[in-house]
Length: 135
Image (cartoon, rainbow, N blue to C red; front, side, top):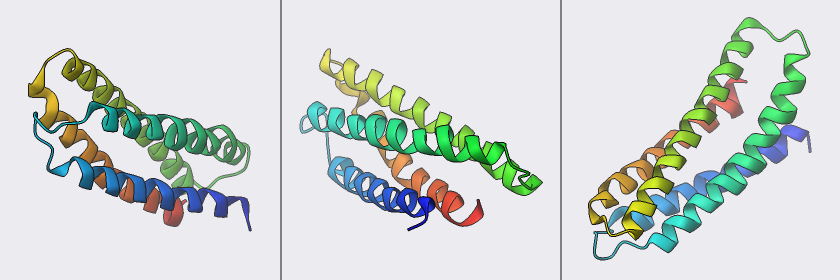
């Protein structure tokens, strides 16, 4: 298997988890909301999707590609992907902050948390397609 193959396998797991997360949180209301489930979703994204997976992309793949004569189009895509990683990190920070507010008694944040989780579930497949097909 080429090194890129491992990244693609990881992509499938990230897509599956985020689709499941969207489904699990879809019907949650302020009364049925589960902050522990959301903590688990955030932990997966921070630990696996970001630190482990994006760490390989940014710390190894993109770093090594930047040493080579990468075509202008690939350089543009690579920079877009890095920016998209930053967008995802910001969204996850938002979930974390909102979940803490929920734990502190603010039940009004549930719809915002669900919205961000659904945003991530829609964002990642498009982002991953760009990594798999365009770079």
